[in-house]
Image (tube, rainbow, N blue to C red; front, side):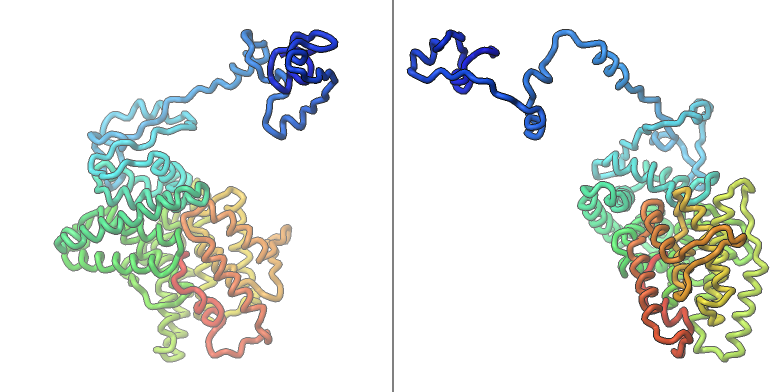
Length: 507
């Protein structure tokens, strides 16, 4: 490495004695000793990922800039908040998820804003090695997407997580399958793992179903959790008829339990939550397709106006929605007078309903209940009263829904909003989709906003937005292709445009 050596020695990579006019190496070998200046360009070296000259060479003594950079890159990991369910020996109340024991230290640490939490690592009944990153994704990323409330915790946290230390391997496989499937949109390598975990969970579920008595089947919480997680997996994955198959299986389990056990003996926590989950998925999906119900109206208390954090509305509102979808399906079996009387009764029942939010400061939950109330009103008017998208009443309701959804989208919140957004999108006026707010200060362009909101919901909710987007665009295309403004078909607007395209759609 000499600066004045000849080019011949440089190419041969040997030391040059720099003798002139001919160095010793060239004289001995009979080579022409060439000396010239060779220009080197730093950009060429960087494009080939090569060091330029002595750039990057190790130095014995670091500069002050290096020492300052080293100190700046040093990060401190805060001590994580450890919950009761991290310990197998800790007693947890399954109904409320409350911890029995001293929690004073945890309360003192609760104010810390932790960037790192310790994932679950020990499950004595699990026959598989837990992928900590996937399970951590379920707890920290997926569970918060199941409720809009900032004050009430999701039952996916309070009821499901405490049961993990004593649950079977099938429960863990199903939870990991759902988390990996949902997270595969971010980490593509999780897709294959999700399919393997789902297949293993189904295999375990079939084995348990084949070897259990009716009573064990009806009361085993693991069966309900696995079925629920597999149902959600199919919704997030493809949203085809497979999730409906799990829904029908859950109905048979619920019927068996109702036949064997009285209502007051049923566990108030986990089993009631899984029942309401399946029944809610059924009724909300049927508002679009109008098919025969899988879960009837007996799962909803029409007198309970308290807003549930997971439902995003009250059971009383769900009962009205359930009755409206069933009345729409039975339309041709009733006389015109009977149908109109029952439709008017449902409309009056909805108008009298005042939903009660347990925490008056929970603005998110209040707005969630409001937007679903408005969506239910649109369904009643369009599916029962033959209202059209260009009517002033429908336009006003759709504008209010879009405004509330916009409020949530601006905060990157999307739990439970796909149904009201779908209802509003299905009833957008094809001739004028500009919707003004109540004070006229803002204009929402319907179709453009719906597409942007769907993109937000794709990452802020646990559902299949791509299938809903496909159905919505098909409805828009069908409306645009209609030749006449006044429909001439024998069915109403909802039955003609929405129902035929919404089979197996989960909302």
